[in-house]
Image (cartoon, rainbow, N blue to C red):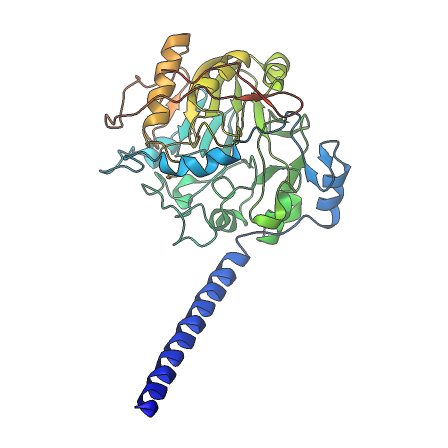
Length: 399
């Protein structure tokens, strides 16, 4: 009997060791798969530009207005999950994107390709923002959220692009497989300070990379591209938080002006941006991935409409929604709340289906291409922090 028990224990122990070994192998393979996509720290000239910035303090970049956090709420918010996180049926996608884009525009042409990926065509210049053609905004793609539809146009069909703007280095804005695919393009890559180090690490020649601090600008043909402030954060893993800068962009052409927010919370310098570079013919501000207890680095629909007004916007196009599940709210909620807030504020909105190009002189009729899904309004949320980091309830999330 004793021998039988000993044999049984040896078998169980071998199984346990085998499982532990398998887990170590899986974790190791995951780390190896994620190592290169995680990017690299700024060094050399990249590091020198970072540390010389007035926005860099004590080893990292800082916002002028500190983030607001409800740490207890982070935990309790996990139970506040919508029943409609993802689409239950296929999302309509424009099926003639490549055909339309193959023809020259008559005026400013804009194409929303999903999330924060935009193509602008103005003054004969083509500019792409935060391009993400990859399957998931996560270093181990099969573990992360999956995109809800294929890119409306392939990179091969897209053709030449004069500039690629990167707002910051979070995975849903700086996509490793996309950058690798673009590395050989005859394109100028414009990034905030420090982000260029990731691109160089992935094979983009340094002479194609232009890094900007807040309020600095560069030229792309006849266009002025200004890196304006935003209120957000950066980092691709636990140990690299805020070591690269984040930014929004003002794109100024001969006849038109555009504002691209990247990711941001509400902040006072939005008025300064509008005063210096507005009025903007089109303003694109993120409206998705928020919760009332999360850090106020995502502005939300109602505050986005208010920011549009303060930055002297004319037409509003919501971005940062409709491609990935990155929050706890229903996937259609950002769109519904944006429309409600815009109607209340009398702000004109354009919401094309993914991949639908439009010209500013002929915007598509506003229609709800997403399904009717129940949603709830949020409670009051502090979108502006005072100088000491305490919340200031200047606006409410309403519908």
